[in-house]
Amino acid sequence: MSAVSIIGTGNMANAIGGVFAKGGADVTYIDRANTGSAPLAGDVVVLAVPYPALADIVAAYGDQFAGKIVVDITNPLNFETFDSLVVPADSSAAAGLQQQLPTAKVLKAFNTTFAATLAAGKVGDLTTTVLIAGDDTAAKNTLAGLVTAGGLQAIDAGALSRARELEAMGFLQLTLAAGEKITWTGGFGVVR
Image (cartoon, rainbow, N blue to C red; front, side, top):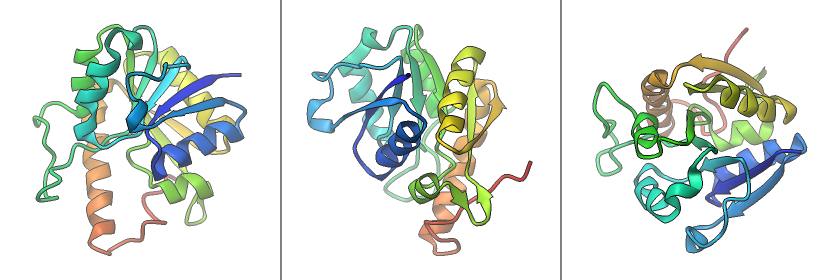
């Protein structure tokens, strides 16, 4: 059985944890008040927090991320204007996180899905698909195994450099939902 630590206790954290638990993983949640003091019990750590919280989490855990698979689900939005990403055009939140955690295996995933589609396992009539970008093939396979064991689909979206496109896609989906062009129970589906 895989052990997963999820930093965060919001809708996305609970939806992701629910998928993993459904697949038989042992899931531990760490809330904001216990960040830094609660141990990272799993070999997989999901950062289910808003982008601005990443700096505090990195500072709180630092070397404890060494050797772990670290899953960044953030979309680095400008939360004041909600009209742009706040990372350089040639980078991503996940790439920045990998630079800060060079001994961790950083993956970008779950940022192109809504909590409701993760929990339901469906986007319309399609099975929810989690896109995974990262430079470590074994880490991507581990995360894909957790996702598929929980009843969803997983697609290897390529190297960590593809995180930029995933973040742009997540940003587009969020702005469509916030603008009531799509529902928070909808989103992008993948036909294979």
